[in-house]
Image (cartoon, rainbow, N blue to C red):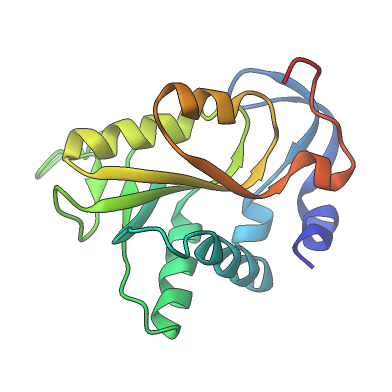
Length: 180
């Protein structure tokens, strides 16, 4: 069902420039899924399932992409009686007050999972993980809805980050560029 929702609502073909700067012939607009009631429910349930057996007290990621995912995961986890906190990572520090990058009820030393909608090279998730680590959080896993299979997994490994995704681009019948 999640694959079908992506095909119907989020997969576009044409000429696109991705956040990574790479050019692509297709684009996956994850927000068309994570800002849709059934899409967010399916994503949240799936990501929580990938977290089974992972010792983590919180989930978070780079704002704006991770915002609905974090909220959805917290709501589903709460419905399951699971205790889980959420946090958001700002692109720029808050301009007033504490001027911090991390927002949410997390404290240094907590084990956390970074969440993302679509991973190409992994740059935004790596930045989110770096900011989480600077805050004192222990990043134990990065989770994505879709891995475009364009170097993200390898970049996470170089940064010592374990990575899993619900779907891979090959699940849509699309082959990643050669050399990946």
